[in-house]
Length: 205
Image (cartoon, rainbow, N blue to C red):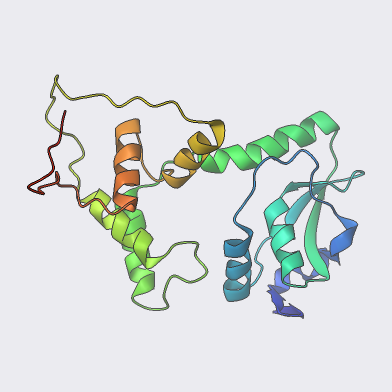
């Protein structure tokens, strides 16, 4: 490991280290990563990949939040891969890096198995997941893949501001399908998958 204050870089990144202030966050980056979680990952796992930067402008195309996390940890250097490209290509790379990960469709059962395996040995700190996430996934995995077709099922329709929609899709990214997304959100809120049974509560469908 290569040390820079409290940050540890994996040895293979050594030749790529440059002054952290020689590169800059892209002025048109729209994706705000969880800097605190990224910083925790860097502290636990060490920094294991570089940021990608457009040559000439020195704007970060991939790794804007990683750069910010390194700054919060007091790093003076950061590993950089320079990409020589025009501005339009740079914007496409910026968009692609943010969007491709969000398009992924995780296998919840496989993910849960991985989380349980790691939690049983070293814990989940530094992975971006928590024990609560594992519990929610466990409940979601137990839901049947398909329900019997019920033509009379009710619809829910609500209009929300853009930031609420963005948060909804971010929080339910591990689910596939709109019903599954909503159900995951309900489980995140503590729902156990059963209809309320309180005597003074009537559920209207």
